Length: 339
Ligand SMILES: CCC(=O)Oc1c(C)cccc1C(=O)O
Ligand SMILES: [Ca+2]
Ligand SMILES: [Zn+2]
Image (cartoon, rainbow, N blue to C red; front, side, top):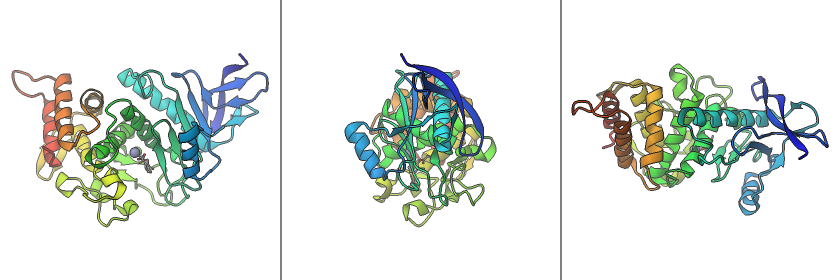
């Protein structure tokens, strides 16, 4: 075979010089962003800023994944591609290390990312088969593949597809979004309040400290992205009941996000006090909830019951009393009004 694994270097979108796995064509000397050391490959492509609808159409109809990112030297000159490639490898490593999950399907499926989708597209996504990243318009967003939590979020959509496959609308869709936010944030693993911000590294480059969403204080972020007045909800009674955003999947996700924050760090919310149990336990509870109990049509009440059960499996009752972990889950869902 004419191709062999080789390490290459390149800068990510923040100017960090990184070393990563790639593939060399020995005959031509060309290198490709194909890391064949993980699963059946972590392969990164570019769409040369094609309009997103045409990329998505060609992808859906013909399985077109874009153009190969290649270089004739040992250096790759596409920062957005380097960021997507390296971050995808990190997300693969997280799921393998923490949950012994081999790729999104737990069967070593190839991880495909395509960057430069659309023209100044303020979006990232999972299209059911692969991750896609826009470059942003430079004001609202910059290359979305630069966000470790964004990539963790997109790839967790892939894990969800291969597990509960939560229907992407209404309450099940909000749970899909929330679990992607929760795992994306845990994978990025920042400290302090930054742990709870989504997309902060690639959002509004001219405004420090803000994010697409805030899991600790959802109500601090205006709903401007969805042309709704108001702020993200942090209680079930304030959930969005409109039609926009597939019935508010990126809006009502904040209610479950707040529950996840309370389970992890604790706090008093609408008069309900939760004693936090930390990230290591929280991530196990959410992963077990997703992989053992949730189904495609699960709603918020199902989520509460599933999370309580997952917590009970992992941290059983003691002398007939719920463990502190189970108590934290119950109290957190009480605090956000989900019963
Ligand atoms: C935190 C990751 C995220 O929200 O990605 C999206 C963006 C940036 C725009 C539109 C949709 C998504 C998504 O993956 O839901
Ligand atoms: Ca973040
Ligand atoms: Zn999402």
